[in-house]
Amino acid sequence: MAGLWRSDEDLFHLISRELFSAVVGDVMDEIGLTAQFLPPSVRPLDAGMRVVGRAMPLVAERISEANADLFEERPFGLMLEALDDLKAGEVYVCAAPDTDFALWGELMTIRARALGAAGAVVEGYYRDSEGVLSQQFPTFGLGPYAQDMRARGGIAKFRTTVRIGQVRIQPGDIVVGDRDGVCVVPIGDEVEVFRMALEKVRGEQRVRSEMVGGMSASEAFARYGIM
Image (cartoon, rainbow, N blue to C red; front, side, top):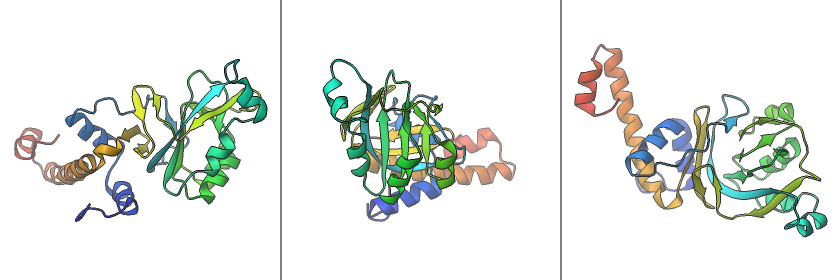
């Protein structure tokens, strides 16, 4: 967008430098997008991790009669194909209701980093925590759990629309995550959301400065409409 950003690289740099999940979520609330945060159980592996990028959504399933053929032919389902299909700046976003095995690990991290991916967000568990931490690859999930995917399930679909909690996630939506949560900005709303978020956070910086200088909360809100 002329004057603010001209490419995903510019936009992601702005988000990483100036924005955070809370302000992006607040702005989406203002325009009626009120169900854009993943469940609060989805947390970063390390509190300092932040993720910004475009979603590459996947679905993980347990092995069942309905999908037995897929997993008989491929021990991880379509996981290897999906991993190799990651593009630079993308986030591996895995919807995985009713799974009890790890969806992310060290070797997956090595491959994702090599491809320039931005991070992994899974509706389930990760493992090889030390190996992932050593690479400082932004990884979000329900926590560490070493039980393997193989023989239990795997990836059934990728580059498809998924739902995690209340959030509908399409390929290309923008994922913003930090220690306060993970939110998803729909691709069709990204210009409005990030323009408003940048205006809001820059306004908040003025309010912060005024309040540090002694301005009351009431006066700050009356003058700037921010609190």
